[in-house]
Length: 374
Image (tube, rainbow, N blue to C red; front, side, top):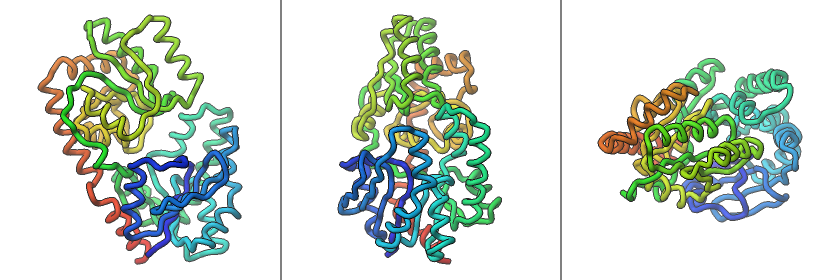
């Protein structure tokens, strides 16, 4: 049995969700699983199926990343030594830097996996509006090149891009999406009424674009649908801009609901006519897999990771990125046709069941372990 460490900045909180419990419980059938991540304070929590080591995160965002990615060497090394870690799965190529350094300097037996969820540097820079982006980008690209060259395997969510990375750096690779709990996300055949957005409220997600154009659509077609915006308000300035537009135009059919649990999200998906997305950058969006399992069709921008496979195989209609007119035309086509909604719902569910690989999450990780030991 391998000792597997997930290393990244995902804060699981003091109490795991039912979905996370199911994920770690499944992995525990073959792996002894650990997590090292950020939290509100320094502490180690044993949740039976997983042990999570929390590092207190600094108040300033930039210090959070600098501390975790570049100044956590001794704490990470000590944790790996104490728990006899032999596989580290880094959440992105920058998070892989310290595991690679430990592998090269002191523990050459450790195998390092880099998880690939789309172009991390573009995602990072477009999500955070920082000064000197060009310099930060250049630095991160150097780090990424180094870690990809020295890792053991690349785990991706999108087949072609991951295959290209593996070929470029001459690395083994494996492709499968993030964990999705089939016991939570399912089609309950509820009455479908609303249109929803699910995701962090940040510029990269195009939330203001969606608000403005849903408003235009509502006026032009006298629609009665409500847009529910669900997700963490991570960028306060951007959230204020979105809410200011709603207030100044006295819009009554758009509401912010904040973050929701997995169970609440499943209910919201299953009771909605349509999920809409305005993203500029994505990997393989888990929100489309979750909503698809609930039989919810979607309307999303025609970007990498969405147009293929969701736009070509699943229940997703795509529109030209940032094109107001194309978005409104496609939105009306879907909402005005019950038959199209039913057709897209069936396609979305079939593709999501295939992509999420029901009962195959542990199997995929065992295959990774076998590849690492070849």
